Length: 178
Image (cartoon, rainbow, N blue to C red):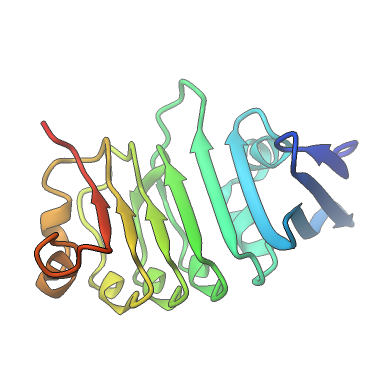
């Protein structure tokens, strides 16, 4: 990541990467006073880091204070990663977007109790969701667009009911219509 200490992710976002001995010490993306990381794979600096060192290495080295984490696979590569259990360390996350990269999700996803929005779109290899998603009491938006049409059915019944329009009109579930 030499030369990427300060770069633009979006026109209104700035990201700063601090390194020591070749290891990421801190990634901070600023927008409206929130800690946000948005990765455009493989084009952003963080995307290039992942290409070199791996997704798990990035997750392990990110600060636990992130409030939003977005990863969108813009490449033609079909990625299918097992999301590492260390994802559970981000207790302040309110938004998690893993678009086109997930093979499996760990049970530790249930540790993200502040999660308001979970976007798992375009994950063709994702065949089941961990029951621990039922612990996400703050979850209002669940996006499974472009995933296996049976994926929603792998959720615990109470979570399925949570997202039924009859019981909670304020909660929003996006799914395949085909």
